[in-house]
Amino acid sequence: MAPSAQSDIVTAAVLVIGDEILSGRTQDQNSHYIARYLADIGVDLREVRVVPDDEDEIVAAVNALRGRYDYVFTTGGIGPTHDDITADAIARAFGVPIEEDPRAIAMLLERLKLDQLNAARRRMARIPQGAELVENSLTKAPGFMIDNVIVMAGVPMIMHLMLDAVAPKLKTGVRVLVETIDAAGVPEGRYAAGLTALAAAHPEVSAGSYPHFSQAGVHNEIVLRSRDAAALAAASVAVRALIESLRGDRATC
Image 1: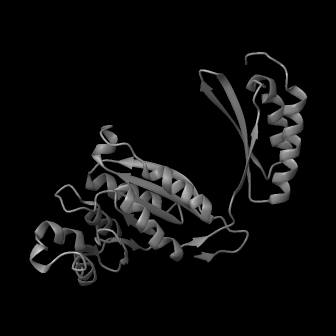
Image 2 (image 1 turned 135 degrees about the horizontal axis):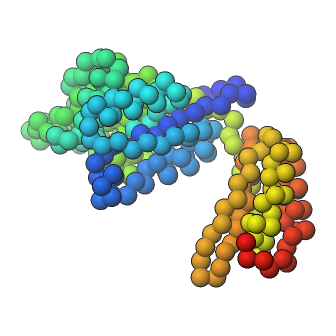
Image 3 (image 1 turned 60 degrees about the vertical axis):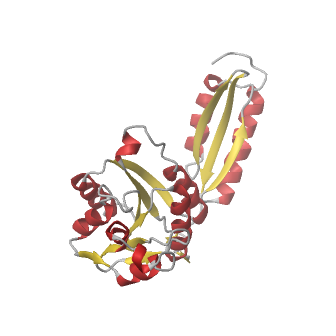
């Protein structure tokens, strides 16, 4: 992984592709995993978009996102069936040919015999011209990276492996540091004004309030995020002092 200059912020988007996501038949697990993974390596996920298995929609989304962010990660649509059209859409978005790639065929033959490499399986070896392959150590059918677009499988286990394979090639920025402060016993309505004032006083720190609802009642947490460790520490001290000053108030909101 190549760290960028300390002042750099590296951004990304995730494009989830698949009718099954939009219909509710399949729950998207990949964007959540990618978000946490990228945060850990110093890449800010700024947008998640979901599109159907429609080539025009995929092309439009890829072209919009790749010009806006440092990286675009796509998931889904690179399998062996007729509705797996992501590779074709990416080739069209970049204006390059797509053809069977000997490198991808060689990867597939690590797992399959030549006579098992039927037309459907060969679809998974069709790669846009100029793309770099992304290894899949489980089933061997590769993803690929072309310019700043990384194309990965929709199956979570395979996507995880592809993300591991491509991560060392990414440029990264300064990691966002996170601190969570327990505000149990203090309703949001009591600390909202104070938190707003503290956020204004600590502009290098992002502050958010997150209530959790359960049978036991409402449990609030305040989450602070910053790339500046000293600024985060100062904001944390101030927020903890605010909460302690209000603790014990039993108002409900």
